[in-house]
Structures are given as C-alpha cells and as structure tokens.
Image (cartoon, rainbow over the protein chains, first blue to last red):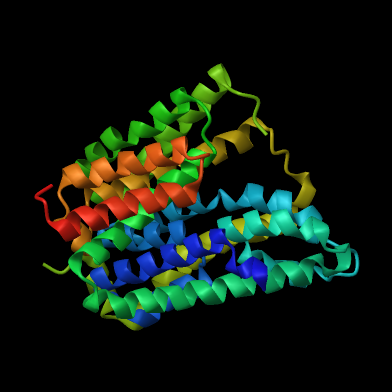
Length: 225
Length: 121
C-alpha cells in the first residue's frame, strides 16, 4: 500500500489530473476520458490518440502514431518479466498483468518485486498495478470535474504539466548533448510537417528524428544498456 | 468548424471503435508481445535500439505538439512563458539531481505564478 503512495505516484496522479483537464478542454465527455485512462493506461498513447484525431489524422495514422509511442513499453516488459514469471503462474495471468506495465509501475515494480519471494512477485505487481490504475482514473475524473472551476492559471499549469512531464521523462534516458540536440530539432520538424498535413506531423518527426537519434547514438554513443 | 474529434465524439459507437482500434490495441499489443517474446528479445540489437529511439522521438514530437498548438487555458499563455517555463523546468531537473519531481514543481509552478500575478509575460 505504501508503494502506491510514493513520490513517483504523486507525479502519476498529477499527470492524469492534467489529462482530465485536457479532455475537458477538448470538449471530450468524461466517459471517453475514463475509458482511455482505464483501458489504455499509458498517458502518451492517450494524448497521441486524441490530439492526432483532433488534428485530422485518420484512424490508421492515429493507430500508427500510438504504436510508435507505445513501443517503449516492450523493453520494460522484457526487463520486468523475469521478476514476475514463475512456473506455477499460468501464462494467462501474465497477459492480464501486462496491461499494468507503464512507466511508473515499471519503475516501482522493478525496484520492489525482486525483494518479494518469486511466487508472490506477480500478485504484488498486480496489486501495485491495480492501485496505480485506480488512482490514475480517479485523478482523471478529479481533473475533469475541477477544470471548469479552476482559475485560468491553474488550468494552464495543469495543461503545461503533460508536455513538461514527457520531456523530463525523455531526458532521463538521454545522456549526451548530441542526443539532446537531435531531440530538440523536433521543434523545427514538427511545425514543418504540421503545415503540410497536421495529422501526420508525429509520424514523420518520429521516423526522422528517431532515426537521427539512433545514428548519433551509434556514432558517438555511450554503451547502451 | 467542428474538428474531426468533435465530429467523432458525436457518435459513441464510432468513438469507442476508434478508441479500441487506434489506441487500446496498439498499446496493448506491445505489452502482450513482451510476454510472448520474454527473454528471446535481444535488447542490444540494432533493430531494438532503433525502435527505442523512434519511441523517444514520438514522445518528443508530442511534447512539441502540446507546446506549439496548446489547448484550453494553455492557449492563453504567451509563447514566451510556455517555452521559458519549459526551459526552466528542464534546467531545474538537470541541476537538482535529475529529479523529475523538482523539474515539474519549478516549471509548472512558474506558469502558475506568472499567470496568477498577470505580469504580462
């Protein structure tokens, strides 16, 4: 229970409050916002989806952009699995449990599951995941209902929280100035493609900047790990 | 003119279909693939590294989208304050032990305080 109320979790709740405010700003009914928060439960996917559709992207383009952002979950899965896998645990449960893998749950889950005996690792992780998900959905609902009553400054601050949170999370996995510079070029590339076709700016930026980042890491890279 | 999102939201069955097909499944896919592949993924392979980079760049592009084309109350915040607070938040994180929490408190706090004081930034 303590793990659910860690400082990482405060950031998680705050970011979902921000999502509730964003949903309200885009005139999205609460049930859609709750559905996304509970069944996607990956804030970047949710934000990519609604802003892509809002910018006129087709469903296929939105789906593609969402999967590009969500692929970052795969390496987390690969690292987390040995900690929760056990011969006595049916695979079915792993396919349920994997829904709860997201940035915060991963950081907390990785930090704590090794301390649990193997057989309880999965139930501990599930408990943690469900706890995180519930508080996230509650945060989203709170943000949505609070939005119309918030002073403009608070609404603006909560909407500002999402991009800053994502940027700081990216920064945690970037170690050189070169990599930072490549990522900063998104500020020029996104508006360029946005002018051409607002719905596809994410895809082009992801592929161009992502490939450039990959090349920079290869050439001047730190040892990856 | 109503945006595509507003039009889609008028039609709940379509909106739910779009949410499942274009958001729930593309996200769950990678989680399930992680279970299916397990240890068989070589995290250090070039393909895997490239995929991670593309994921990071997608996040970066979302950041730019949210900052440059802001929604709601954030649209009332001047670009100077938006980009300024963004830079200050990043600097705060780098200076304060790479703590995401401190970066957020400083950056978000700056937007809130400057907007509340209404000092014309």
